[in-house]
Length: 342
Image (cartoon, rainbow, N blue to C red; front, side):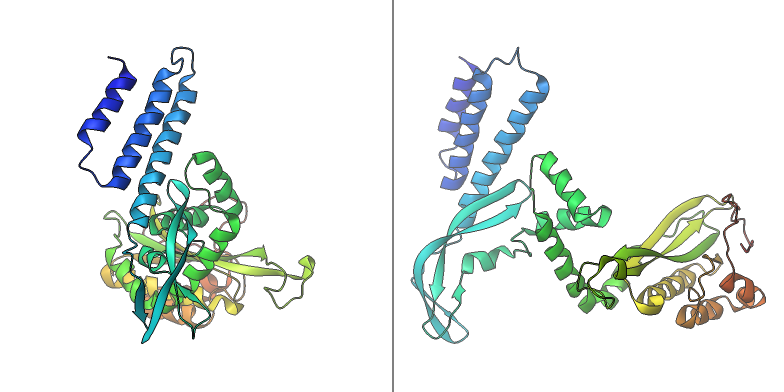
């Protein structure tokens, strides 16, 4: 018996008990597998076969998800929502982006005479993110944008053979995540910090901050719409743990979009320092930055002086107002108890 006939026979006989969407997806995979098996496999490049297999798996997965989503329609002729009755009308097509790609499905709409909008219980049940992304797809897109720009992320997705969200979809997603984060930041950071591990071999922790000029889109900054007038300073900060030889063991980092005085970043750095030194009061605290006048002002300066008053006070003038990296681009080791100044 040929491979393709054997595969089809298994799917036909063994999967009859499965739900209809699953069975249809399984049979579609069998059909695609048969096509691959009937091709001239000996003469094909393995990379080409790999692409066929990936496409077959993605197509099958999308078909399965489509069927499972459409099964969420319970067929109700009317529903109650916000104290009103909403009646079923003609179905429409919905689109979602999942890890396997983009899929279309049919779902019912419900209308109420006193409301201009429609309800779609199937869509609501999916918990979609901006850009009609599923949560797994949104997590991957958010991670990619945290590593590179949305445009670069889009190029990577285009080559991966799976989901390929648009640049604008990823930008909307990150914008919504930003505002959602603002509402939970304090509680969420407490949970994140509680799970952070301080390397066992750490003897010092360095706190550093700097700025980087970014070009905002027209209308996003107070400097007007001209590109030459719309550059603003974004901020980034790190806490790095070092061993006795000065080697960096791990780093905690954060960034902020342009803000006067780097207020939010300084508050975050102060909170991170406080949390770390409460857990490891034996660590030597180092403050490292360039000579920007506002780097160590206000709350961050006061917090660091409070956390390490015996260490910071004698050198505060140097460490807070001087360039702490050597001027000729070599590096000084972070030995225990050492302080980097210019």
